[in-house]
Image 1 (cartoon, rainbow, N blue to C red):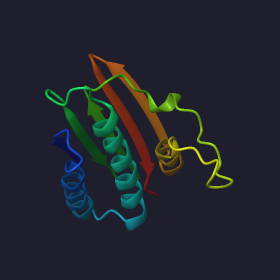
Image 2: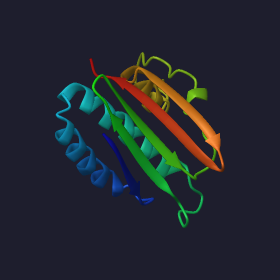
Image 3: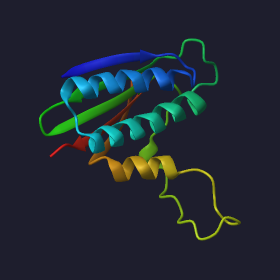
Image 4: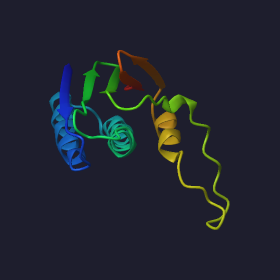
Length: 136
């Protein structure tokens, strides 16, 4: 099953994304664990894109494509925001105490841990973040 949703550049769109994902997961009978992993990774990626990807939100284009097969799912976020490759983000430091904890980097860590692979491409003024998830 292939599906696509176009999103506006507002954090309110996350709830619309989640409703859309729930419908796609139900249509495919996707088990709770992989569905939750996909949702969490997409929420993180889309939130970061909306929050940091656009100096001017006019003309922002954000879409999510979802391809669910028998043994794998592929979630792709495409946007025309600033060039950003999350794969270049260093591994987040382990938190040892709250006083020295650094903010940032944990969303990318989460995406790395919950997906089976992540790829990023910048072409034609667009970021294309592809996350793959094993379903078996």
